[in-house]
Image (cartoon, helix red, strand yellow):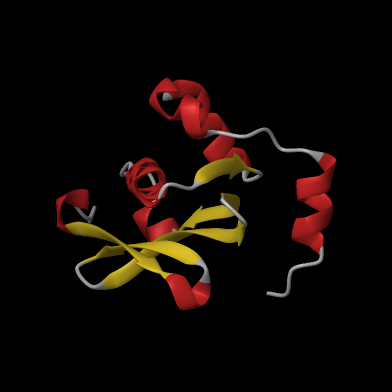
Length: 112
């Protein structure tokens, strides 16, 4: 039985440094980030197997990046999925910063 993504909602969970997508109240996936000044560094995205193939990851990342724009921050796509998404969605190019060795080193020193 396939679940419909129409009942999906995205929320930002600041205390956990991630955005979550919920389907009928159950967490179906997440995209994790760390804030570095004016940058929101996305480093991991996942969707549970039970929810795969429904476009939930794309919806999650789309809404997360829209929230980043609204907050006035910039995007750094360390996560391969977020980087791939951005290549197909040029509307975020104006707020996307490159992944640099400095960002990667900084990310490695962050707890969690």
